[in-house]
Amino acid sequence: RCAMGPDQHVGITHIAIDMVLDLVMISWVLAKMFVIPIEMKGQVIFETMPILKHRMRTKRFWLDIIIILPLDIIYLASGVGVIGYWRCNKILCSVYLDPFYKVISQRINPAVARAANAMLYFFMFSHIFGSLCIIVARNVGEWNMFDMVGTRRLISDRDNTYLKSFYWAILTLAGQLKGEAIPDLEIQVILLVFGVLVGLPMYTVVLGTIGNASNVEDS
Image (cartoon, rainbow, N blue to C red; front, side, top):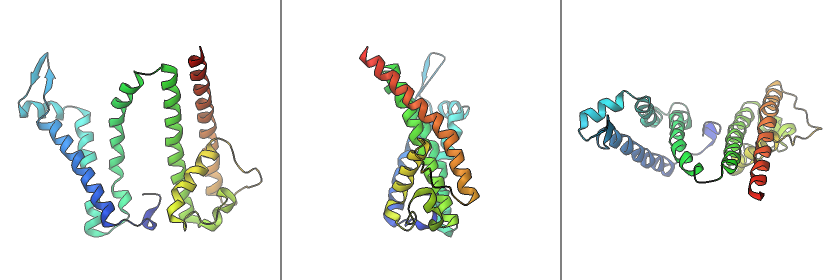
């Protein structure tokens, strides 16, 4: 959403879905603060105030507070900026994936887990890199992006903007660049150099971990 900016149409349905998901998250955080018992010095504590005091001494408590802040209400009230920017704090919800990932990874072969982890990071960086491509296109104009991405309708084709940028990001990070295409603008060259310097080592790691996982499975 931050990359698409005001070109992305945000309707009542999108806002309603966001608010419902926010309510689920807020309910979970409040339950952790006041309801879910904790273990302290070998004893299970059920009282509300001791639970709250214990939670407040942890970093996760303050992280939860930042996550549930309804900053997008500022956008709804004032219309200032882009709603995607006001929801950037929600990206911190990704910290909750770590315990889930640890449980899943313990049940599979360590080599396969490393390969899956490497692929996950590669696709996450591809998402970020593709979003940067959209931001550059919005600033320099989509017609000036043809030499770099191979299309003049990266922004105007709104239904496929993200898919095109994500596909381009994967190819670029994997080193599959068009050899005859050298962008004229400095910001485009910087983006490509950054992507190649970071993407190629990451892609090499992905291939290496997948190869190791295949050898382990075969043995």
